[in-house]
Amino acid sequence: MTYQVAVAGASGYAGGEVLRLLADHPQLDVVAAGAHSNAGEFITAVHPHLTAYGDRRFTPTGPEAFAEADLVIMTLPHGQSAALAAQLPADQKIVDLGADHRLESAEAWEAYYPGPHAGTWTYGLPELPGQREAITASTRVAATGCYAVATILALRPLLDAGIASPEDVVVVAASGTSGAGNAPKKALLASEVMGSMSPYKVGAHQHVPEIKQASGAASISMTPLLAPMPRGIISTVTAKAVGDVSAADVQAALAKAYDGEHFVRVLREGQWPSTAATYGTNATLLQGTVDKDSGRVIVTAAIDNLGKGAAGQVVQCVNLMLGLPEAAGLTVNGVAP
Image (tube, rainbow, N blue to C red; front, side, top):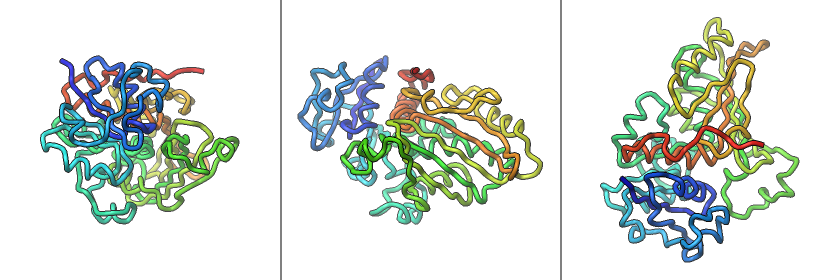
């Protein structure tokens, strides 16, 4: 059986990656690719690599264009999804890649985002305990933030296993420039980014409350970095050890948490994740150890921020919601060099 899918915000980087994955999906067809300023333009005028859509144009974003869709994927800027969702039928399935419906706490939302809290949808990270079943049963799913995916998957097994303290978790994570979207900004010019790394949103990154909510951490200090690469995220998480913890304990906790998971791979001892190994995939690569000097537990995770951090994760959720094989249209094998 084939399902009809509409994409809102299809002219952005994440929206383009969603379109790329859907073009090769065996059971999903794109009925509408919604855009605002690009409405009416050929899709390949914005995404020249998407030759499968050579004769297709962007449609206006709105309920009329999405009426025939079995499911709507929203890749809109934070704060814009709730208004569109309110215009769609209550029984129409939606996956929202924006932050509008991720947080359970209105207070946490108001501390990090403008505007009122829009309510809470099912959290779209299938690898968390119980979430796969919840996503499958839901009509409205809030996909996970890109930094949050890598950090939660690195941290949650440590806390569940009781080998790390939920207090004083430190995260240092670097993202490619596509994480900032495709709007023209001086800080994202090639001459500003090439050969340089810089921190941003230090001390107040919007993914912190989401990470705390989904991982069980009580306090997090997060420093995000802009890296001179187009895509990818690498997140290094450290936490105070609880008791006498060895590197083998850390690796065992990760292996237990993700035993049988298709898209989360714990690497062999001594092998550490790299962003390049995840390009174009829905994979999360993990490795952990214990710091010899401080005794803190360390886990590093790598993802493609447009893959498992965005479009790949969305398609994974779509598959579950429509009763399709979870891995349909997705891969864990990267491209090299």
